[in-house]
Amino acid sequence: MQIKLTREALLPALQAVANVVERRQTLPILSNVLLTAENGRLHLLGTDMEVEVSVNCEAAIVKEGATTVPARKLLDICRSLPADASVQIETGAAKVKIQSGRSRFLLATLPPSEFPSVGTLDTMSEFPIAIDELRDLIGNTQFAMAHQDVRYYLNGLLLELSPNAVRAVATDGHRLALCDRELATGVETPKQIIVPRKGVTELVRMLGHLEGEVSVGVGQNHLKVTSRDQSVTTKLIDGKFPDYERVIPKEGEKLVTADREALKAAFGRTSILSNEKFRGVRISLTKGLLKAAAHNPEQEEAEEDIEVDYTNDDLEIGFNVSYLLDVLGVLKSQNVRLELSDANSSCVLYAPEDTRARYVIMPMRL
View 1 (cartoon, helix red, strand yellow):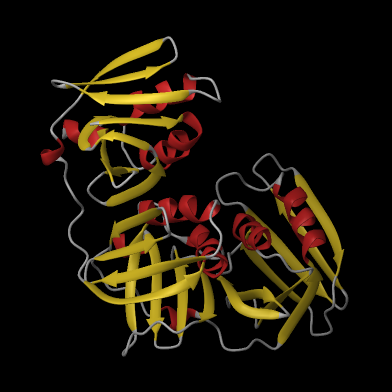
View 2: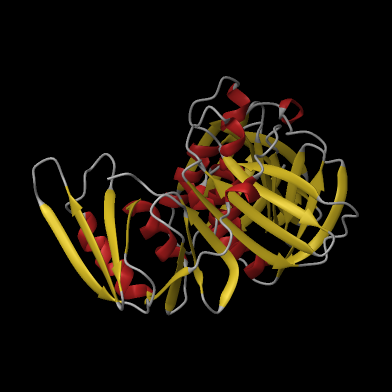
């Protein structure tokens, strides 16, 4: 294999692939990236056996071929080169030579035939989706995924596909995030899949710099999202997601409408003196006013008054302030609405003008 390309073409492709490569691997070849030169393009592939990232970039192919090289070392070399550098990659006997200007590097290689795959994608349904739509589905919900929960199926993002809609749901047992988008998926019967945290992370990275549309392929055990020059394939979590609809409260009779930024700032200031472990904040509602109060074991206290649109009976309720701030951080609307029933019932938050994203937070006893 012998190719020539620019640093500007190689670096972003390498960064995308190297993200999925773990620094410490049980199999040495999993620390490598697979380089394949054919049809006037360089194809890069990285995997940890759970998630696979594939990227194409423009290159002048002098001689077609394939090899695997250490991902991190190649990335560090590429980063260290000048911005306008030209890079030449050539394979030899068990080594690959990288040359740019007066710089020359020899890296050890492993046979490309040994490079593993996450498995074949037995596509059961495939549909196009606007990148903005998929980015919103994931971005509006991923923060509520559990971290290393023994209920392993909570450590991922549920995608619920029906013939004309996609729903993303995440919960850690204390809060729940849900986002809907109308979309023709091509599935005949509703289907649920759970995307693991690392797969979600790589999808967010991929979608962050793209525009237009991607293709989503759903298989029995895999999900594959493909753009023109990049794809992410992830294994799915084998488990049954809980019946999340049971925890979504029916419409609460106590409605609070507030300026989102003002509420976010007030909760942020109050949280400074909350208990570092439990992060509790007490909310007291009276007509036209929301009072947020927090205290900690050092007997320090914080109080904040916010003018809100509220006309119902007085109510006191406690919440984990971090959960409230997470929701206020992902919503983009000017106002936010809170639906409440009583001090022992969960709260539902959403933007008044767009109820496609809804958030449920369980109360705390303070």
